Figure 1 (cartoon, rainbow, N blue to C red):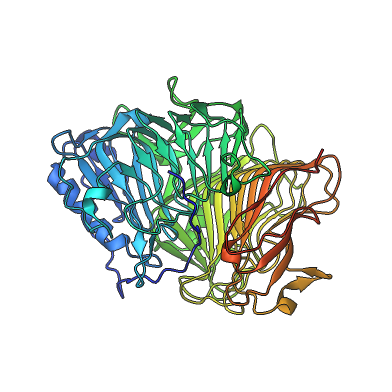
Figure 2 (figure 1 turned 60 degrees about the vertical axis):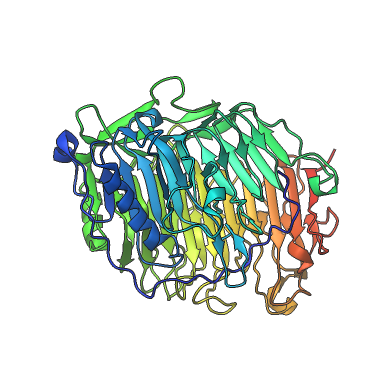
Length: 624
């Protein structure tokens, strides 16, 4: 299926309940696992195969009814499945995943937990009848197998999809956009990354890693951009503007990104890298053979290909849950920091943590694992989390939400450029997300600041909100999404949007980015408010003038200056012209012709403009 319509992220007005009740379900685990299960709080639901399926179905449906419409709600939840099989051919388990919801298996391998059924995300509709997946953010799926099993008659979906339920009942449907990762998942059957059951069905990009897809194809559909890393693919259908594959196996699309975009008759926009340069998969919670809860930390990999688990056990280290302080939203930063100083690792259970002091990570190899999109909100302009000059820290599964008083940063890694780092034990940031405004007024000068050397960023979305509450040019103020001062930093799935100055500034040497997605700010009121040093606007991705070595693959930047369509950006990418700085497969797009990007990189490339929404592609910079 080829989508040639306008994949435009329009603000969607949702009907959200005025208040959300706190989760009150008790974890339904039974047997030996129940005896060994730590107290993960009321927002974590642990299911066992011995539990009646009707009870599981009613519980997940009740959560979906609460979370599916709650784009800026306060509920957070994790659905965890103990090893075993759920659902059957005669009675499949089919449910929806809403906002701030984590769905994960608790096996050592994705094959240890099997869902016969489907785990779905459908479009949402605005008041004007436009149905898209453009704002389906903040949810995740990991560490299980889905045997796509669909009844002859469409199930009684709860909540009801915004279209014909019979159409929704056609496969595993994961119609999401940013901050909705799929990790360590095995899908047997048809997977679609768009909900084609209602119009216009736009979707805005995503991330898949360490997963296997067998028995049918993956339909990209309307996904504007996507990264698939270290996965096994049966087949991949179509692309829109920017599809990147890194270290994948199977029927992987061949490299075909062209100066002629697909919308003008060119090939599909595929960027394909044979291997992934340096990776470490995200830590995850699991139970061992005795039913004890543990955390597994996968090993570092170089030049990796395929999944970590397809050929046997994942290489890495298993840690007892006793090593972790299991925090709840009622715990203060002082309490959390005391546990960290005592040598504990940290699990943040689902909820919103209001912080009056920074959480400080000062011990090497500390693990900070968020469940159910645990959210850190600073008060008084503090930095909610600071990582000291230590190596090997692993942070995963967190949402940083800016407070009303501007913070200098939301996550600070290292205290000064080049102050720490170890290539054999890099710090890892996986599925770490940032939000400025939307849930209310939020402000921060920068979202993520990396001053350490040797850091891996594996799926991040830094978002200055373009809709919601507290949104406006002088309301949710934020200069830069990602500031990299450290050397030897590698980023996969770097998604940074709507910041008011440079979205990304990369000053460190030997930086590498595999897949970048950006939208420039929607709301500059006039050109004078968005101009510097004689340059119109600010680049989306700026490599520092003194940098001599930097390389990036699969980069896209879009404009939609809805407040003032006369706005221009001189360019989206700004880099020093030197042999060691190389960009591959880069593009700009004007969404519906609402504003203009004059050049792609520096002064190279034609203007992105015009209502046809055709990208301007450059295969390499500098050119031959």
